[in-house]
Image 1 (spheres, rainbow, N blue to C red):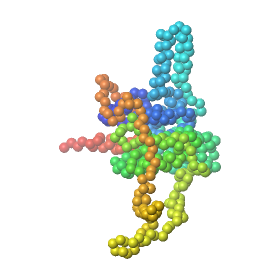
Image 2 (cartoon, rainbow, N blue to C red):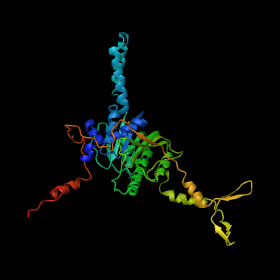
Image 3 (cartoon, one colour):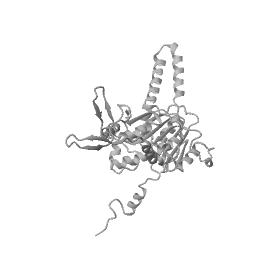
Length: 397
C-alpha cells in the first residue's frame, strides 16, 4: 500500500490498516466470499501470486483462526444481541434458554477448521503467516508443479514425475497482475497469459467440484476466455467487488464446480490437454473437412459465368433457391458467443472505492501493517539516495 495523497483519502486503504490487513485487496476477497460463499467446505487452498499476502492473510484468519467478516459476522452479532435482549427482558422461564443459546453462539464465534492446508506462491518473498506454507517460485515454469505437489503432500515422490496431486485442493486463488504499461491491449494480453499459467497450475491440483478465482482485465475479446473456462467449470461468473475501483478494467473470474472433460489429464508440458499441438490439430481438421467444388454463377449484366466460392443453397417448396454467401455465414458464426453473467459484489452501503473521503479531525496516518519485503523499486530508491534525493545533489555556485 502506498502513501500518496490519493491513498490517504481512499477509505479502503485506511480501513485496511485499521483492521490489520496487509493490503486493501483483502476486501476484494471478502466481498467475493459474501457473494459466492467461496470458503464453504474448504480446507485446502492454493494462493497464486500471493505477495504481499493479503489474500493469504484472509485465508489464515478465516480457515485457521475461524474468524468471521462481513455479512456473516454481522448476522452472528445480531443473533447474539437478540438473545441477550431476550434474556434480559423476556419471561423468567425463557431466560435459561436464552443464556444457553448465547453461550452456544459465543462458542461458535471462533471455530478453526481441521486439517487446513494453505500454500502461497509468488516470485516476490512473502513475510511469514501463521499456518501457511510460502513458496518463492514462478507459476509459469513447469518446475513449480513438483514444488507445489511436495508442499501439499509431504509423501510426494518427484521420481514418479506425476503432475497430479494425490490430495487435491478445494480452492485456487490468483490475484496476480503484470506491471501495467498504459497500453490496454498489451496489458490485457500479458494478463491473459498470466491467467493461462494460473489455470494450468490449478488444473493439476483442483479436485472435482473445486473452485477457481482469478483476476482478469476485461477487453474486447474476453468472451473467448469465458467460453474456454466453461469447458472445465460448470458455472463461470464475472464479479466486480465494490472495493475494486470502477475506473479500473480489472474484474474477477469466479469458476465453480470443476468438472474436467472425460479423459483429461493436466500437465504443464501439454497446457489444457493440447499444448503446442493446437495449430497442427487445426490444420488436420481443416484437411479432413469435405471441400465442395466452387459454384458457377452467371453474371446478369455480361452474361458470362463467374466462379464463386462454395455457398450453401436451400430450395423451398416454390422452387426458389436461396444462396448464402460465405462471408455472411462466417460473420454469423462469429457472432455466436457465450457471455458470462456479470455480478457486482459488496454491500451498497459500503465505501465507494473511487470516491475521496475527507479525513476526520485529528486523523493519524498509520504505517502499513507489513512493508514490502523486497519491493521491485528498491534499487531505484537506493539510486535516488545516492544522487542526493529526487532532484539530485545541490551544487554551490
